[in-house]
Length: 321
Image (cartoon, rainbow, N blue to C red; front, top):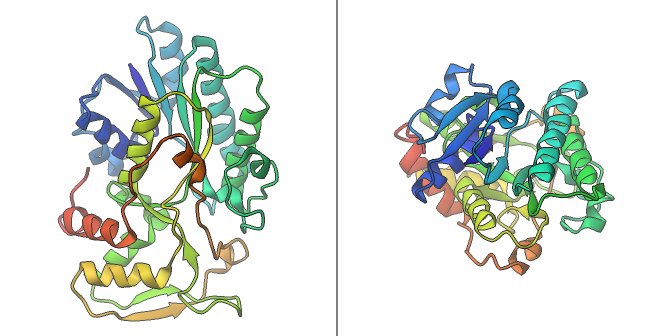
């Protein structure tokens, strides 16, 4: 039995579909399943059972079936949320409880960290433990992920295998429900579908031109492949970056979206909203040498390849994965 938390959400529901493709169906999906706009993310998947988040530990205490692995991808991910108590409960304390279960039952696990832990990037983007100790996130979400990473590194008792994955800017199928927090490609597609001009955030730094802000965009399929690799090769525990390893500009991203829709580019720039302007990352790029060093050799899809697949096979026809 494999447990996947956050299974009604974007990344975890994609992972469930990917595990199904590998013939894995003995899955327990954990989340808050009350939202109707998330149902299509998981209803077509093959699994053993659904559990609401508050039922998980009662289930674990009473099940007679051994837990083979836990993918803990559930979290509150809204970077504009200011209530630290929410993040403390869902991203920190809940994660600690899962970790302690894995220690007690000798169950391997993968959990979701975040590139939001890197803040403005003043310490670089290395996933070494030394760098992790120095990071200064810019918001409550990033801070909750950073606090758990630090807590994990302090623990003397650990699961037989564990990996924390710092997800960078993820896009791809199953994010229809995310609203404002959906990826930039998702929002650009909606803009193009309505015939409007694509608007990107203006740069508020004199050294960076409008549209030249850079992020490490990574297609969700590549995340699922890495998760499956770690499930198969439970040898090198640690915290790992998970991005494409290549920073690309938002202009590059927009142009890839236009090409995927066979449209001529129409771009405009607007001020970055004031509520996120001071915490806006102008550059992210995952150092992927640590993951490569443990044997992960698959190439990541380019930004253009990921956008093309996402637009043509999912967004344009309303498909889920």
